[in-house]
Length: 99
Figure 1 (cartoon, rainbow, N blue to C red):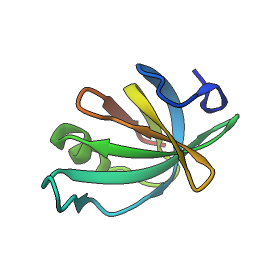
Figure 2 (cartoon, rainbow, N blue to C red):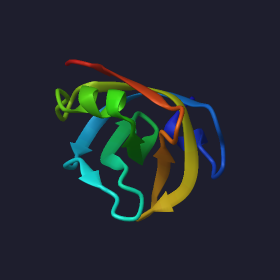
Figure 3 (tube, rainbow, N blue to C red):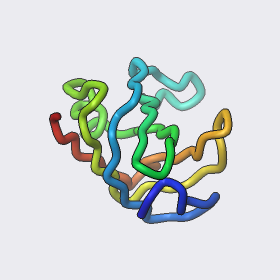
Figure 4 (cartoon, rainbow, N blue to C red):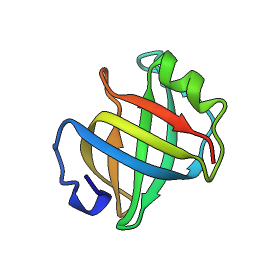
């Protein structure tokens, strides 16, 4: 799948993308969950991703801008500042591929 093909509420999104920006891991006050927002791109566009889960977040600690990110089983949640917004939710997984 490519970023331009993502529509709101699509499930089981699989992408191979480049990391454009990584924000600091933060804690959501209402739930206590930790999340990291990462902007990614492919040849068709950019997306904003919210990544949850200790295993996923531990991989992101080693990632840097320019690395590749393999995204598995993500969900589309609408737009964020004109970017497609995707999230790992409970079941999504990532794999960081160093550049």
